[in-house]
Image (cartoon, rainbow, N blue to C red; front, side, top):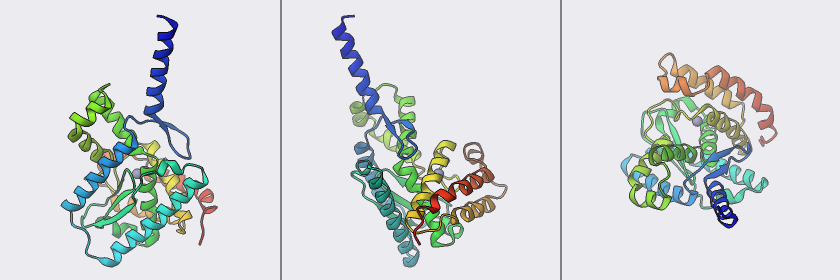
Length: 268
Ligand SMILES: [Zn+2]
């Protein structure tokens, strides 16, 4: 191979690499991301509107207002945190939105670009506004760390291999939207949130604590919330939960360890 060709090949691969890997804010872990966030967001906004059309918003004004209030505070905290760490670019294109949907499932999720849904079924466990902030912080952390994009990317690579992105977006857009919904836990039946990997869960727990503290909620509430979750699950946890989530005790122990750091951000 002529040197010129070799260089061309090397440049080609370094571009691929650059485009398909990104870094998780804060932890700096590099992750696989084959779908550019602009594409992810446009898919997400479309799916979110569709979801809201097909599902019933809660008519409880007080509770709906609380979800929006907590979401506003946490998203402002996230923006502040990203600005302080020179990462504001990573929130480009975000259109935060927080809705409470009538549904008995104990669930909440956040899609790319800051589109959040809480189900009414989680409110008996969040109990207080600070409890809502625990879940909001955790879900928003999954979203800004692009855990869903990472899950999607692995799924896409597995299913479509090296198919060109443009062709994928054009010819497989329905399949991609299905992958998006699964990756972000929309419609997930499992426990409080989609069982991300342990790594994703502990990243979201850690970042979520910081975000809630910056928004003015006491991060110590996270311990109480996850304790209530553990009690509510009782002995009936589905196997998916058991295999992918850290045990409740491990999670609570890890949260306790992270609280002193989060307390530094806590503004009453
Ligand atoms: Zn999670």
